[in-house]
Image (cartoon, rainbow, N blue to C red; front, top):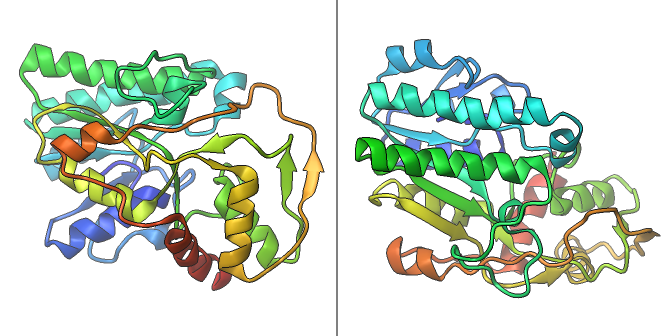
Length: 296
C-alpha cells in the first residue's frame, strides 16, 4: 500500500491486517507517521516516483495507491510538483504493478474532480476541477482506465468525498472536522469563512476503508464514495459542538477565493456494483473522531 502511514492508509492497513493479509507499506513519511503503521505490517520508506525496488522485493498481488500530493494550495503554487507526484508517480506505480501482474485500487477525489455541484454528482457528471490537484487526480484515473484497456487489467478508481475520522491530524492540510475539533480541544476558536452555507459530503474513514476492500474484488471502473448528503459548514459546526460537548461561538472571516459552494457525490453506482453504502451517520462518525482527537 502506498501512503499507508497516512490518515486513510493507516486505517486501511489495520483492516487488511485484521483479515490476515501480508501488508507492506510504501511511504516516504513526508506526511505520514511511522507510529500510525500497524506493527504487523512492514514499512518500507520509499517514494512512489521510484517504487521499483520495493515492488521487486514484495512482489505484490494487490496495490492500494493512496500516496499523493494532497494539498490544493500547493498544487496551485507548484503545479509541476503536483503533477510529478500525482501523475508521474501514479504511472510509475502502475508500471511497477504491471510487472508483477498486480491490481491497483486508486484513491481519487470526488470534490476536486467535479467542481461546483448542483446536486449529488454521478460519475457521468461534467468534470470541472478548479485546481491542479483535481486535474492530476483525473489524470491518474485516465491512466488506470488506459491500462485496463491496453493490458486487460481491472484497476479501480474511487472518487472520495470529504473523508474524516480517527488519525486525521488537526493541523496542516487536515480536513475541517479535525481542525475544528483540535481548536476546541485546545481552547481555540474555529473560524467559519463566508456565511458558512457552503456544503460538502462528509464520509467516515471506516466506511471509506470498507469501500477500498470491496473495490479490490471488482473488475474495474470509477466509483463515487460518499454519503449523497450535503452538510453545510454551519450545520457541521453544530454537530461538532454536540459531539464534543463544547459550545463556543466561532469566529467569522471573509469567504475564501475559489472555494466550492456545493460538493456532494451520488454513491448509487457503488451501492449497486460494490454493494457498498456509508454505514456511519455524521453524529456517529464525529463521536468516534472526537474520541481520538480528545485523547491526543
